[in-house]
Image (cartoon, rainbow, N blue to C red; front, side):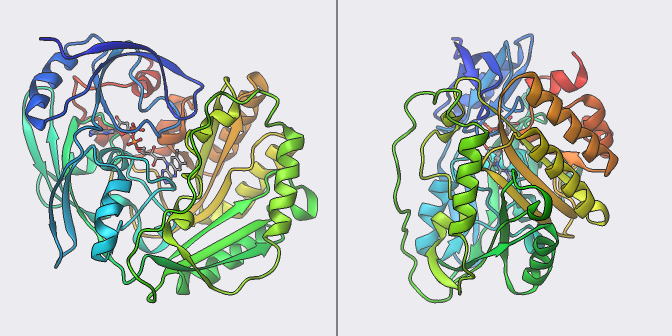
Length: 445
Ligand SMILES: Cc1cc2nc3c(=O)[nH]c(=O)nc-3n(C[C@H](O)[C@H](O)[C@H](O)COP(=O)(O)OP(=O)(O)OC[C@H]3O[C@@H](n4cnc5c(N)ncnc54)[C@H](O)[C@@H]3O)c2cc1C
């Protein structure tokens, strides 16, 4: 029996790219072997996907087969002494937190949304607001179960099958299907955060705040007004926090709005509405605030309270651009990028600036390295947006930086080759039966 059903018009989070998929929805891990075998026979190969929170084409496999892993979402075991949790790869970070917070544990690293699967988080080796002192999620993985399209099953650990382990962490789903993960969680005393937000007037102030915060704050991130120019270039709000030691372990997710039901009209997000939002948001973040206690959910996942917020960008979707540049050139390169963005009057209110720390990433293809990362959304305005992104590429290349494949659907093979020096090592471990739209674009096939 063929387990695949054809779906047209599949999109990733950015909604600029569309794909036609043959999709299988396994409910039990015992079905996987057969489903993998069937899917890998497709001429465009097979790709396992999670919740589709990647923005570009790394979670698409146009005219190919796809396994939706989200029903393989069971907890397998949890050791309260060591904090090591084993779970099927399709479990969401939200489900992990619902289980772990009342027991006094939190994710060791989390991206800015809890609506991603554990497998997806590993396949992109995600980083979070604690990168400076924790590195990426791959550093907390004890074990991975990986099924390959030749029917073989591999148990990967930091000490066993090391090459395949490093290729699978950040491996964009190209080394096989991750079936389960063993992840070491971090103990917490409270589900609250001691957090504060500080207004900064320009990039220099951002870099001093980032440095000062490293010592005393586990988490930090900044929001930037990308349309501010001149003296105010790079102004924004710096937020930093630690897990509180007071309070209980209750789960307070706060307000949750329904999904955005339809695409917003294309004019809804224009330079005037974005500039107005940025002005008000910056002004409201005004006063220097003392530490205050807030629930961990709005701190880590400020966007999760609006379902399908990506529809706010209208039918044409948006591009996200995330780069990292090394520390020695970070100030100049970030300044140049912000100047280009402000000059083009593009960008949006979702702009994040963050320094990444020294701890090396585990994966051959992991994105983070020591430096500064800028991430922002651009409503898709066609050629003018693509031209601006190409100018940003030039700045990143010149600065010896790289772009994040999880956020990308357009950078060139040359940018990937220049930015990822371990690409050749990674390629040795690719499963020939796996493929993706991203990989075909990079390989030109
Ligand atoms: C609002 C928002 C905020 C974000 N913030 C951050 C952030 O702070 N830091 C960060 O690093 N990222 C961030 N991201 C990106 C997001 O964390 C990654 O794209 C993540 O990988 C998405 O997981 P997913 O389950 O949706 O996987 P998908 O997007 O569906 O897939 C992602 C990749 O994982 C592979 N994959 C998924 N499941 C498996 C499996 N079982 N076996 C093998 N391969 C698999 C896919 O093939 C694909 O290559 C953010 C995204 C959004 C929308």
